[in-house]
Image (cartoon, rainbow, N blue to C red; front, top):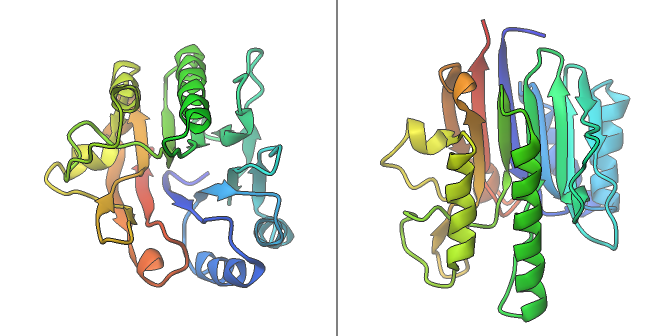
Length: 246
């Protein structure tokens, strides 16, 4: 594997086959080494993405999605190995994809459930966050990237939204206690980095890329790529990081 790698994380919104073709055409023009896609599904659009990159001899991993739910897919120019922990995440495990690059860097991609005010969806999200936290606590937190659509906000998010609960903010805080650093925030402390815009024009930073301290000094850049959202390839911007591993 080359010493400098670009990691690209993007919520593709379970695209139709027509939109998937546009996403594929755009992705094939880029130079990203590792692509983590969230909000994937057992659908024609996502299957088209997977098959297209497999046909072009990329390495592709995805989660075994159940019950018409959503998951995560990884596409890489370089060999990747799916993690096979003895104690896997017990709840909605298909919303987490954990793999290792040939240079030893670990990547965990996730698509955390959204919720409304219904008791069922609140409890579902709570249980998932609890399960995910326990999963991360069991990992050997070295040379690890944790990324995805978290569907939560940082406690100091600007603007402040009062529909988010303390247990959602606590999950973000707990990531720091686990040794994970919010790379965009570290690199751009004064920028908001809204990756999703609501119908009223309000911005939310839902998509994140965090890493362990041993990788932070190797990240030369981290930014949001907004044009794919404004061009309506998805309703989310992507987050990109370049790592120099010399």
